[in-house]
Image (cartoon, rainbow over all chains, first blue to last red; front, side, top):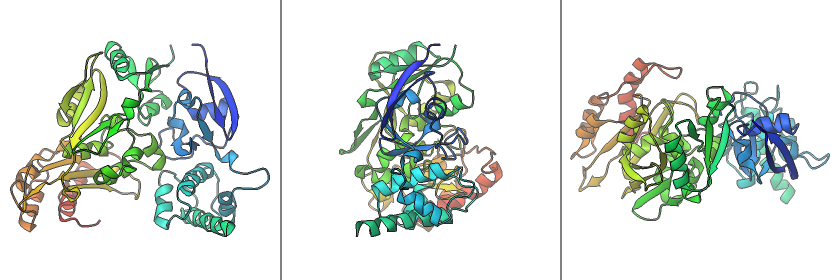
Length: 160
Length: 274
């Protein structure tokens, strides 16, 4: 079957690829556009390692039909830093040892960013709820929760 | 022949395509269908997307609620008129899943999934099914769930139900081993309208206690016309297992589900926390 074109904004840049019609967004990002931040974990929507933002909302790229993203804005962890300056969430993840093997980290970062974009001062419970769809088998979650809360606090200091 | 994707710009067009071609599958939110694609269970045929805004329309301001089948769990969670359904919508997956998972898809989720359908069953929801290019016909949800096992032809366009007069009359509880997101050991929903201190038209539904979401008719009978007190709750717990056929799966055994159902039903009815 002939390939079909798809075009969307990826981390602020217009990108296009020719794909199979039923390809999911994750495969399109990784195979078609060399964007390797989102990972392939379960392929079932259970683990959250493929989490991206689509028009600002967290979605699972393994369960998203790529052609449905035509004309939309897809954001991954690769787009968080501004040049050499890491995003406050990335800094907080380093400071709080919130990554061990690192496989869940890109998805965790996107889930956390979706939360802080909507709710800059989340409670601990709100952080837990926001990352409920993201599995980490290394950290026990506490460093990740602490990092997200620290990033929210850092945002406060930045605004002050 | 690999999988193809088609787009329907109207509900009628989608219903026509789905009715005419059994090899075409509707892709609603993708959380069920794309799993089948990723795991190789769906290798050929056609996936159908609907771009008609009516598929995601919500009419929630009146006494009769209408939700398009493409309405997501996040849309329900963000709608103040649907506050009584927030617990049910938030019990589905994590935030990313809720951005994608739709009401229509939840009606097709296999046990132990499909918690939102349990809430809709306790609300006596009607399912709007559109076959061919004709207008949609209305079907009670419990009848739909029975027909689902035999294969439903056409498009599930949406659901309709009456808004509870008092939000406190509607209760929902999902029991899972992992918090805040976990697969259901069971889910229970109850709509217990109160007239002069007596329950009238009780509706109680279970998820993960049978091959599909089911009404707990024994519990409904035990509560009908009674005050919600210790005696009626005890009678409801005694009737809790009527009509249940739970399965053993990776989450819980059949035996365990039967053992703990009366306990969780009692907690739901008394309003106890976990």
